[in-house]
Amino acid sequence: MSSVELRALAARLGVEGEEALPGCLATVRRMEGLLREEAHRNMADESIFQKLLYILRNASCEIGVACKGTSSPAHLDSCLLLLTECFRCLRNACVQSVDNQNMMRNLGLIDASVHLVLLLQKLETDLESLLTALRCSLQYLGNMATGNRDSQERIWKLAFPSVFLNCLNTHDEKIIAYCCMVLLTCLNPERMLELQEGNNLNIALAVLQAFRRYPESEWVFLINNHLLKCPKLVKAMYAKMSNQERIMLLELILSQINDEKFIISEEITTFLASCFEEKCQAVLRLASATNHEDEEALVTIRLLDVLCEMTSNPEQLECLQAYANLLEVAINTLKLTHIAGKQATNIFTVTHSASGKEEISHPAMGFKSHLIRLIGNLCYKNKVNQDKGQRTHFTANHQVLRKGCMIMCETHTTDSIYELDGIPLILDNCSIDDNNPFISQWAVYTIHNLTELNERNQELIAQMEQCGLADNSVLESMGLKVERQDQRLILRSVRKMPNL
Image: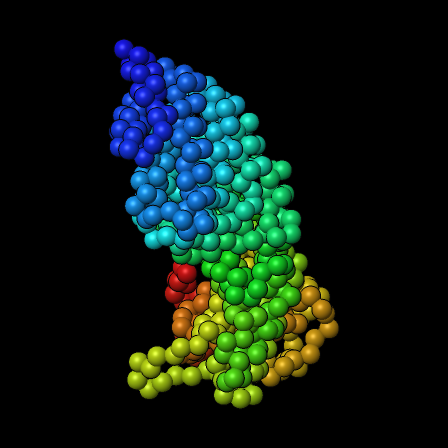
């Protein structure tokens, strides 16, 4: 009985004339309701889709006239309402029906629909029916592409890149979400390569911008997650991006990095480490009062934030611990910022307000604290990073720190944690600093990781204290105590180290 009704409804369609529009609209709505049910979808035949195609083509002519400004708003609104119902009807007919998808594609419904989307994007009107028609057209294309490679190929050929880029640059959240649905459904490895070519990268950038505007949108999240799984695409995007766009990308990664569904490859992880290595000293420009908005320095700050979070993840931690230069880069950067803070009063200078309530607003706020956190993570249960350059040994000739006074020292190796003065440098950053919240806690954590099961590092700190080169009160504040045992100095924990 339902197949008879569908054919009867289809027979009513195609009547020309504006006066027939209300009846035509009611007929399509009835068909749309029937096609929501699987049994009715399975009974749909080609005649139904032919009549709907006829309506779409007529609508194209009407909208083409409207684009030239020669159509009344009322007539345009009626046309858009009918067009919307046609797309809803087609959308429903596609659901879990490869046969219907194939019939529509062979009839040319994909071609007609993409052509209509392009026309709708040219319309200059504030009619709500325009947005609804665009949304339903994209939903239809998304359903047409689902599970159907031939339909995906046809949609991609007709819609890429202009339709996708136009939709992503609208201000309607639903249009952007449905566009991402179509884009994600059509993507495959070959098309991912196309995204990396020339101006096509603008689509990937638009997707990132969409996530910044609509972080709660599921389809926008899914397409971003998909794009960020491709190292070559990420590298190509990063190379083309402005510094502001790089900050946006890093903030996206930072916001999702702890989500189990968000997977970052080892190649991207090491790429971001190399970016930090290359540009880390840009942050020193923030020591100047006139460079607070230096965008390259802001990128460096975000890179550090991302690396800190990555090293809190066991899989990414292992990858970054093996990255050859990251520990050295982190320690050298900490050293340079530390020196900059001592040479003049700036954001890298240790400050402590009497009230403790003064608010500090600066992009480099917490930068030294995060560097120490990164160093601590890189040394976590990693003997190689704890103790690089076994040939170096501590002697009283080393000029290190005494009660907060940092003096550079000379050593004989190029790859030693001691040559980098990592331990005394961290000890010199364990006091409260309003510019670096929790820096003392991160220093405790890092010293713990440097000395855990590492007698050589423990002996180094013990000898520093014995020679008067390390402030014993500093060690005590960190829960450490130097003791003599069997003619040796040992560093012993007097309380449980915090788990940061």
